[in-house]
Image (tube, rainbow, N blue to C red; front, side, top):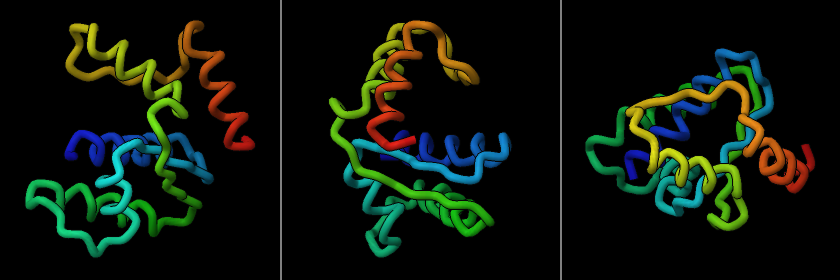
Length: 114
């Protein structure tokens, strides 16, 4: 679950740094979603630091919403996870989607009403 929580935290950090004031974080990890949403679920000791960082970020002056989605409903993340599995890089940040991903970004964002 740490990878999912790290991804949520990193996405929030990047969004804040880029000045985005309305953020929707989607995950297909029910455990990560419930942990971030409720705050009452027991968290593995290694994850407490990230949960606290996420909560601190959420308390800033912006709108943050978390959604639990099926993997099939989030084509962008599914595509990126598959692409990441074949890459040799340990860590990569994509600021702009490459052409293969742009249509999926538009589809996913239109389903959110953005």
